Image 1: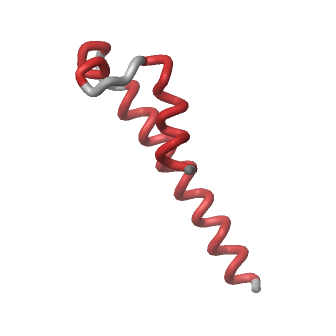
Image 2: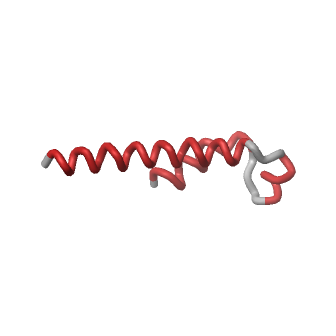
Length: 54
């Protein structure tokens, strides 16, 4: 039971880390690069949330 709880905490931590990394990487792109992949700067957080938590 405790192992499951620890496993869930680690999984949540990994998802959060993945979210932050995705946001950081997308924010490092310039507007032209974002446009090339069909993303606008104001969509970065929602896209990162979608691919990480959905």
